[in-house]
Image (cartoon, rainbow, N blue to C red):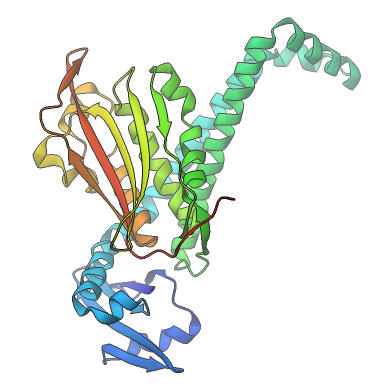
Length: 344
């Protein structure tokens, strides 16, 4: 499926239309069309943010105009969010990169005294000093190296955010959809937060899956990163995060995150995905940010033809240090990604 989103100023915000598809932007005709012998369904819709163009060859969308219109509306919803997220990504990411660099420097030089090291002008002497420090405190060295690897992974992800910002300004013509092992893609982002979960005594239970989805890895990875950052802050200490994968009968594929986390009130179920909104309990706990992470997640998932929903399990409330936690299940649903199974 191809999409092309244009704001009110005529700027292309996000698109995977090739040059051959751009001729459809000026068309007034919508519905089933034939191009180069291929049957396609084309549609466009306008809202207060701009115009959405959609081109599909998937059998279910060719067959059902209702499903196609739902898909068209879904992409239209994100026009305003994509426009705003470009500036948010740049501002917040630069700040976060500076913070991460400071943490990396602290971690590195907590192992080795920088002033002492550079008093030694001989390279071999410096190496011998480092070797001696490693041998004398191997456990601290191992922990520091792990933290440096984690911080480097975080920095790499934030650099991807800057690249994403640049891509958004270039209308994302460089999106690269290819088969990705869904479990590996999720695990790489969970791994980055292992030490945060470990400090809280949280166990991670990732179920098996050999499914491949046709995804743009960078945007999907960024979506999961924002989500895991959120989970690591609000999950109940000494609990379990369960990650499950399911192929559904209607051809869709779901990725489900089940956990006990800070209570989200019923009237907040949709609001938590809105730009700038922070949950009431998150504010009370003083762990809220700018209310951008979940919005970014939802927007980046839409690029991969997916959406996220929240189910709150009633009567599951528990308490920790005076705050309410509940069994919250977040489900990412992939609508029509190219699926295949592979044990590789």
